[in-house]
Length: 220
Image (cartoon, rainbow, N blue to C red):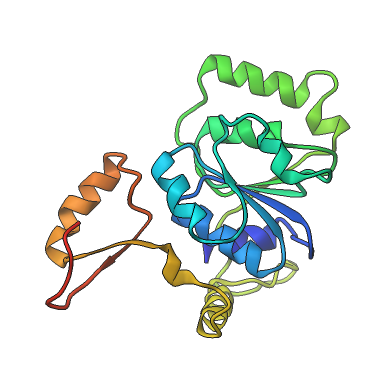
């Protein structure tokens, strides 16, 4: 499970405050997992439909980055760990804006294009200009790639995809991890093409989609 991998690699510790940037399927999975592990969770999302969907999951407060006082949700301690799943440079900028001393940003999204020039200069100034957040606030930026299929020495990281999935399914089977809540749409299999086209076209209403092969499948 991708969310679990990011939490592992960022070395989450009990009772930390976790911010999840981007509340698609990956971000929501990470938010539910962090909540299951005892974190105080804040979700951040720009899309109104996804904001409304996320607020029904119960893992903690959900806010738009354009809201005044987003950081107020974090209380006096601020963010210990930020799981940046948006894949957007603006999402990364939002993560950096919430940094305080010793915050870790676990980058789970993929930035497929270079940042716009003005945004790149802004990020460079924030991260490296005096007083540099990267240096003076001891910011850690952690890349979250795939876990290895098996643990090989000298790697001390013991997570593997098989172990992650086993843990996730165990918690879901115990009713402690409500993965069913991530299903935003249940549709007929003949709608696969139209749903995939909509998602590729940027339709953000779709979060978790299940294709119902029974007679009673619903419309997309």
